[in-house]
Image 1: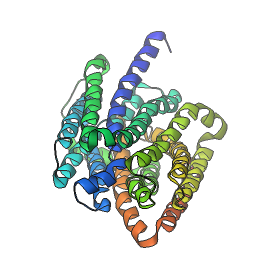
Image 2: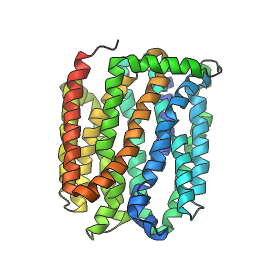
Image 3: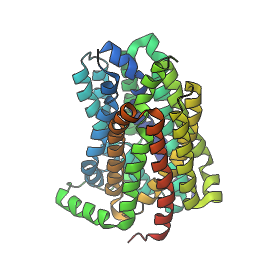
Image 4: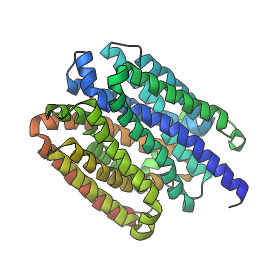
Length: 394
């Protein structure tokens, strides 16, 4: 690759990194605040935990629309617009004191955030060759993971000083910075001319993608993965409080462990690929996640939860990044649509997982509920390793 092309690729990843950071910073900041919001807004913690679902479900449901819109109007343009809407929604969250209004605003924020990371992945699929793509996406994920890390950690640490409204205000400022980077930084000369979105064609394209057996495996895998891994996140703060170990601060630090594990993955992805390959990466990721979930289920200390979440972050990204790269190749002429369906499946799983695990925690207890999640994620790693190795793309 010549120096000009290398610079163009680096510039693209840097801009997408700002955008991805802003969207995940906003998404993860709510989870350490569940207990505080429940007290301040006089609601049940399990109800307030559904603010995570209120973000994730619109994120999922908007994907079938944003996929063809991104393909038609330009991924760079849609990413920028979505970041602008995200900024306004988060600013409004800082001003409300009504839980119902907060739910509505989180839904708007989730829908707008849904146009950032999936379209960024599709854009990298358009611009970066397959032999360099997994490492490039791994590098991009550093910013996404840092957004998760700093969002959960920052919210937990700073809430006591500035309140949850102040946390929302700062997430809005971060989203505004991401929007500015996208607005000023994208090189739109490389973009195809905008055209009118053809939703009838998009439906036919989605049918073609779903007819691909490899795509069905990948979409099903991320749906199950999200339920098993992410269901515990919004419930962790109330569980830590119930053990008398603290509140938002300790929950934020524990949740930061997941992102730290993701960073370990991002910096070691090249070595992992070289020594493990795809199949062993999937099996190893599933087993690591399973061990971490059982550890959290044992209800030790928040420090032990944090260590388990570091391991779970590493295992999760061993699974998820492999799925992401495979998805960018199931429909090379309609990557935004394929990645949109992938994100739709993933965030439907996240939204459903919060409700499923909330009921399981109340009905089965912490250890049994999380042990069942562990069995599911371990099985997923083993099954997908075999199926992806033997299922052709067409």
